[in-house]
Length: 453
Image 1 (cartoon, rainbow, N blue to C red):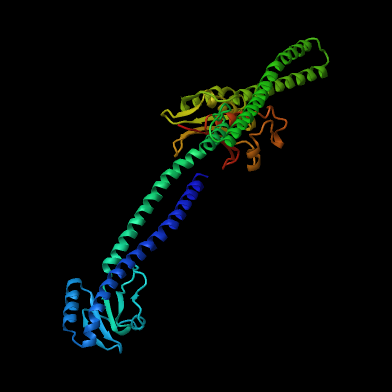
Image 2: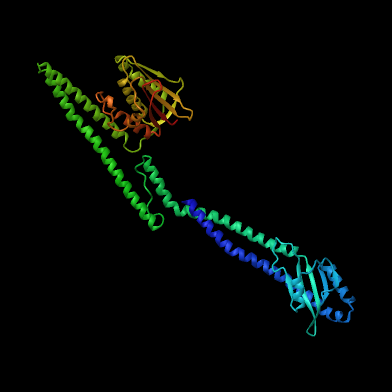
């Protein structure tokens, strides 16, 4: 938009400059031509008045002396012909006279060629004046003048006009750029606010009262829309968080009552039903915990910190070792010796690794292997990868796995709420990082997290 405005301003200025400077350039050339022609006509008329008695009497000595001095002094050639176009005298470089100029002069008219002295032409200025005596034309005085000086004067004026035009265009470019920036400043602020909101800053707004009335109304409408969207999202997060928190109390009471009921049951079938009910209450508690964590992760901006990814990854692998040994899964860490700094939201890497390692151990069969690898990527990012030897997922399933409550078709009976990967994705995005899932080359699943250093 800004470039279009600047180009529009420049086009308008160029059109105005061309409309002004082209006629002015033509006028300068015409004026210089008229000046030169008038000067040569005055000289030729004087010579014609001196030549009339000389041609009639045949004594041309005095006239020839005058013409010779004129040629020596000004470098302008002269040609004197009678009414039969016979050359009576010639001085200087006098090319063949144009037939039109001679015929016009013999007809009693003053003639000159060319009509305009253009800088790119080299034709000399020819002026023909009839020699009249008592109304009869006795001959023609013709002068041939070099036009280099006149054409140079015209060219200098044209160059000055061109320089003025270039300076005007340069000034207009600077002015147009500033003017376009001033005109689009409210739109730029609106665009910046929209990008900030898209980046997660729900508090970003456009400063009201700036720009023309139309953009002021647009800014006010944008702020109202942003307020409404932010309020709706906050209400949604608050509802999920409060509902998850409030549901835990009756769920805890229900679990206690079911556990207490078990001591009074003698029927083996009823005991099995009791164990199944306890498992379902545990599963419901996991769902509520996941919803609560997700609501907290999505709540606005989070403070960023720089943490040692090496130490954090080593701690989480060590914490999950007992569960890995219980499930007979080999859990190893491939970590660099030096610290790897990462810029992230507080506890983002801890929670992300907990979710990814939990999933890997959950789906890796006994005798399998889970590897947690940390490296500094070539682009300077800290890269954490969790690879397992489980059944893995297809590329289409990997694209759907970060959706809330999504479960793979073959994992419907596995414990979990389907929120772990969604929480990982939210935390990584809040940290300005990148989270990807892909089938591993040697089978299983590869989950990769990248954080900025």
